[in-house]
Length: 104
Image (cartoon, rainbow, N blue to C red; front, side, top):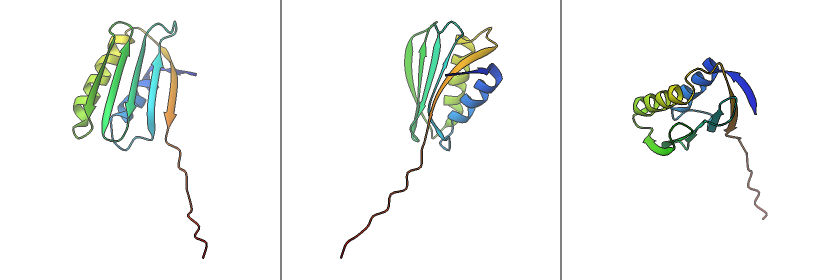
């Protein structure tokens, strides 16, 4: 868990809203850890989970990333209204190369 500036957290959330994102899941927590936002990207849809001021989960298609980006940034501003820093928990893709060996 890292403590990052709020502008960097906002930039990461914007990058999460595209289907080219290297991150699978980002979770941001406030300093007291009583509010959080979790964004999951599986390449086809974006799942936004708010926990704190409002508690809900919504799904957005990545075919129109502007709708998902707007919802994510609105939730971010709602949950982190006066914060300067946020805790970050991130999961990203790892590239695993598998070779198939055939024995003749």
